[in-house]
Length: 471
Image (cartoon, rainbow, N blue to C red):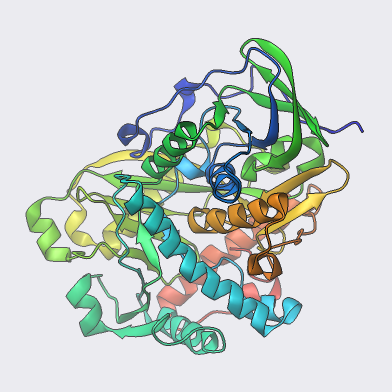
């Protein structure tokens, strides 16, 4: 078998000097792992040291502590989305439950949603029992309605959810209750779910890495999987090529799958951007509230997300950057002045009291969006490897679930998790270029226009209905 060769160009690869200038990077221990100097031999080799790869190794050891596991990463653990996201460990899913139910049945969709609720608590248990200082606070998520169109849409979303979740899982919060928690300019109320925690994502990565190394997992950084297939991985690192053998190979490369020729169309790498403020002055914190550290979003069509950290900083992010032709992924895209400015303007419009607070950090990175927005775990017969991922930006909790599924598949330990519609799901490829570029960016433009129309009229717009919701 020829295996799968990635596109490797040493002049193209990121180094530690090109790590994003994120708040999270400034607060982690920054493990630095070397590449292997001899040919590794193991039971399971995991490609990618983000959450998916780390949780997979964790759950494999929970089921079979005798396993010999190796994890490799082209840069270092947590370098991708796992270490630079907005810090939501959310129980909500990126895919529409009604669409999922139409494909898999209502029971399957309901079971997946409730398993996600439990998953958030399982991550919290790992944090507490491991003594991981990552700012974990399960305060839930507030999605504020800033305008009539947003309130109409959020209330409809709550009503539609009743087939799958109860009021205790997702409900409407009126304006008075919202203001008692968080004061958002112009908000009439909010959709609320308790199933989300704010977290410093990089410190969670650190905690996972430390736990795995302590249990005997070998972790290699600066090591690219140049070629892989059933039972082998050709690794290219600082000392040249080494040849690893493994009984099982698990590919957990998420948005960076776009760098390998045969998986370039498996996901669309869409860039998301984030800013962080200095710690808020006590007077500003008193004015806006946020004592319970709920994660926050606005109910517009374009994705926004925010949290307040344990030391009182606002971390605020969102989408809006054009898709890069050819699924280009590179550190030169990790900042975007226009999008960062738009994010700051949005934050200031919702929280006017923070206008004079300095922005301390700006960063970004790609998230992996499958064509059907569905996360999946599947065995690729062509490569002989297990593939997991496709989180559309919701991977902090979802990766814990996919890691459990992969672990049960490999060890053969029975589990109801294998009946979930994540297992054995493989999304179809995105369209070839230039159709992919035109379709995604058209959806982006229409999303922005729809938000502008709704803000001006106070009524829902249907601009996106003709092309389907891409964002």
